[in-house]
Length: 322
Image (cartoon, rainbow, N blue to C red; front, side, top):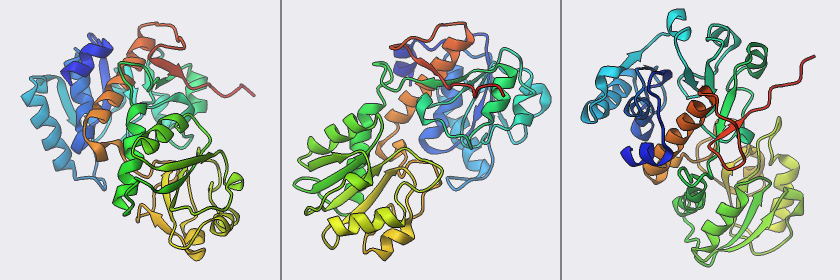
């Protein structure tokens, strides 16, 4: 964590930050802000599928105490208007979502929302972008390919983890990689580096018959499932019996796939618009990098920095005024 703060140059001195208190690797977010010099970090928590309020408080404060920043972190179970009016940066974190118009309207005029992932991955259900536009509040994505962040290098190992978990060796497996976005290169590299025979397709319709062991779905989410009944039928016509559909990113119709004879991984349904596996499944480092980068991008914009192609920060476009 100290290395991530140093390598990104994260400096939150003088700032007030509102983020979440979570469990596991995601407990690092408020601590990173405090380590970077934030004068006050509010960390909101609530019960969730990854732990209780007590779990989040305990894990966050134990780590904060270990790193000597517990005195600047306050755990919250409710957020007052006074706190909202005080924050420089608020993160688009799980416990805080959705960031509603009511919440956004109480922020300072110069507040910044940290998206905490790349701008093109923005999900409308996470926050009210129209309210942000009306208020002039920037929503700041992070360049995950910046050398000091480099989260994209973990995407290949993440897909490999999914394939291993569903029983495939990867080595020697014939894999159809369905990807229409910037995840393509790191996913392809990660799979082929372990000996998979990979062919890429930018749509389900482009898939052709072959001895496929698995299809890895990494298609940008849309308003409907990227793999619905028609797509499931097409894949079934192209694949041999026993093939697996692995949901990396992009919504799929699990019932349609099962009806067409596919095993689907992960076994449990994935929340719409979300990835099928968390970065934390391969350890804390990618989470530390991502959270530090997300804070750094927001801090850069909050201090008036310009957006450049190779910099930390990206901006989610505001919708055009009507």
